[in-house]
Length: 200
Image 1 (cartoon, helix red, strand yellow):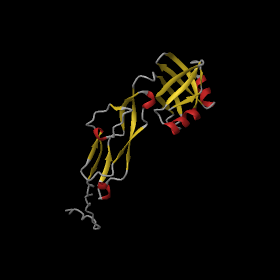
Image 2 (cartoon, helix red, strand yellow; image 1 turned 90 degrees about the vertical axis):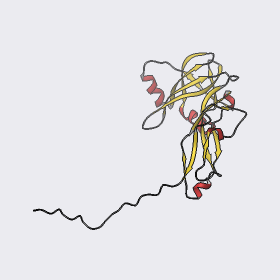
Image 3 (cartoon, rainbow, N blue to C red; image 1 turned 30 degrees about the horizontal axis):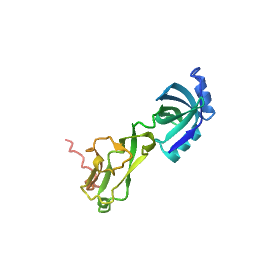
Image 4 (cartoon, rainbow, N blue to C red; image 1 turned 120 degrees about the vertical axis):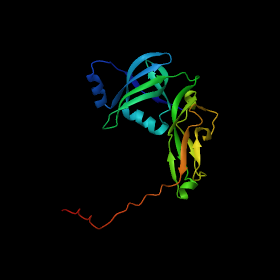
């Protein structure tokens, strides 16, 4: 599903213009890629964050630039270290009929049987690379771990198949494992003070 986002062209210099935009609640951005020259724009920060919340990071965002609608994906973002607010966004213009590659989150669903039996579930892979036309890109891929017993693992090959996209990540990469809980070694303690060494 494509969503629209209003943008406006911006000047690159002076640098102070970027700070002015941010004070106005806008984020400096750039659009490049399919059938478009690199174009600096500004977007409303709140509107973009709303799209992220409601549609995910892999949503197709339609930008209106000089009266032309441009289908884009967010290729990269920068955020303030302390406030976590967006400080820059890079939009990639895409051909809606050609496949592109993005990362999709791997979301574990359910409680593993092995965990109920006292085991520990460890997830080692949180994202996989997928390929699809922009309108078919998934935000996340859910995998049910309910039947996993202690000693069981899941790899990329075990992810549910979908005709809309292809998983590019190596099929043998491990996603999750259920292991036996490590018994903590009891530390020997004593309440008796150490005896002083003999002094001649």
